[in-house]
Image 1 (cartoon, rainbow, N blue to C red):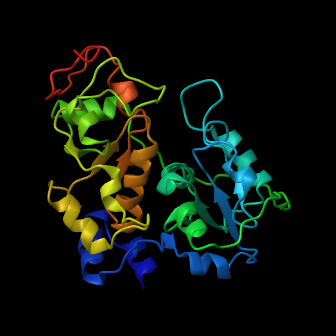
Image 2: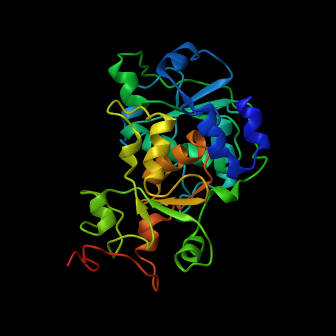
Length: 309
């Protein structure tokens, strides 16, 4: 019934239906538990994908049967700053033995940061059944579940993208239309308060930086970590609705979500669209594009616009 409702109802009514149905991840069965995954590891219709931040983590041990997608090589264009091209995406999924009917379950470290990025790309390229392992790699390990050291071998497929959901992606021009009042949407910045206020440019140790600090004018700040519990599992749909409602995001208007390079915001995009059923686009250019762009306005409550001074 929930799947049927999702296909037939306009997006504007999805939030209301979610409230009435009241179950976490109702929108598409977007989450799977560690118990469910353990019971389905041998299911030929399920393909498990790891996308972790830390290099070598997959090789040291991974969920049995999982395929490793390297976020910095497989999910992006090798030359341009862009996501993987359609041709490269089809080749990647074909090597993993994925078909359009496959149930894809992604997981990774850092509470599924880049696993959610992968889920967004799967959805962008029109894959129907995409889920996250609730709690990610961390919860699987803390429960002392089985890890494999040898990569699994899956028969190759011939994956073809049927449609590209371009409406899931926002560009700089789309963001500027909102900033300048030409388009109605909510802007959601999910970075830390220190980044949002301009007290720091980025988390310590990262390489991708903007020349200016602060945030996009009009954006509201809900740090990505606010949506998960201490064990890394997502909060209930009711808790998540309340969290976003407090800053005026309730599903009545579309949302554009961003962070620094797009990985953390993909995590919040997943919550908004796949768990709550809200209309949201991921601005993957994020602050490293906006904060380096010429001629765009910024907000900087801390006053540290240039070089931290």
